[in-house]
Image (cartoon, rainbow, N blue to C red; front, top):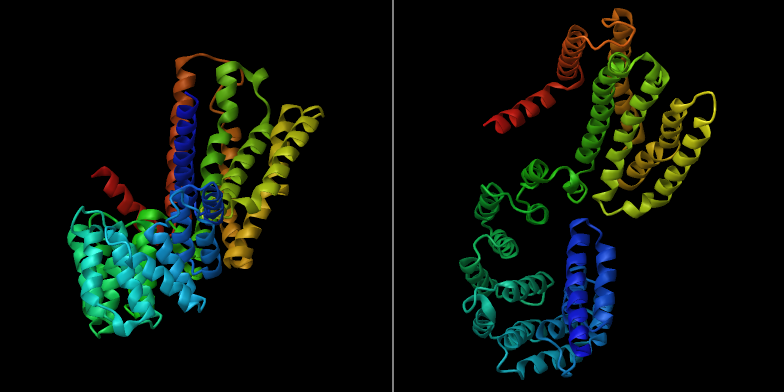
Length: 482
């Protein structure tokens, strides 16, 4: 029974590690993901060890990769083929040719392991290109899973390693690598890594048009490529001079939002989107929330009576706090999706504590319940409302002057409407000042609120949204209706 519990706990730990690593990667928390993998590797989890070595290879951290391979202690004393091969590549990068040869020979002495044979054949090209047998490498890679089981993961890793080392000047054999990429594509059409390899081989042979057409066909497929794939395509396009980076960004922004902009190094585009969103959050927030707040007094007085209304100061402070909350959440989101959530942790905690202290303190003053809303608004303004924009400007190259101009424009466009509708709601006074449950009073309230709401939406559409934004939203609405 004890042994069974140990096995269950071990499998639960392994499963938890895999899920956690996946979620951290989705959130772009790659340093944290590496830390989890290191802990798993230290606990002798084979999956964590293999993933850690693969990640370090992709990051070109050769010293760390060599150290990670040294720490792998399999129960049977025999390293897995991929870990051993990546260790050999690390040795080559560090100039230790003899150690790389030992690893290659170790792999070659495993005749019953197709993956080991494939790695041995590919490594042979890097160590001794003159003795490299291209046909053997292709056949070994095929036996490693491409043609037999349909599992292309091993072959894709091999092809990626082969392409990387060719780029580094360790040999050529482009036609053979192209054959391997074709074999992978036959089993997994559209596999993005080998698609990029094929495009690279075509471009280097002078066939730029074919390379561009290959990536564009995948780029404009009915099913959108993943965000990582689109980033990869943009990088390949930039490296090969295909000039489709902007198309990659446009598709990625359409499908996945603005998050890839920094990875494209498209700082101007990223800055424009952040400024645009800040302007819209403030302008639309003031207009729509201000309209709702303006009729709050009439609604409460009609519903529960004038004595229960908390006052105009409470309504105004609550509306302002809602707009500021939306503003600060925009920048919190911008930081979180880039993996920098930890940079705002301290100020967020400070803001939460300050919110509690100010709200409770002001509630026991003459302000009463309005003091709670004022305390919340003050806490927002003193902490995250300025610190989030400061971090975004500092970390991502957004110019503070341009951001302030965007915020000022949103304020200038939204505030006049909010003030005007507030004054109109007070001056017009469509409802009786005392509590009434008459159907006529409710009908007048609903009619006037609906009219004011429709006018506020129209104001947003005509005044706050630009011509381009109106065009974009028209297209989105048409897609929704269809």
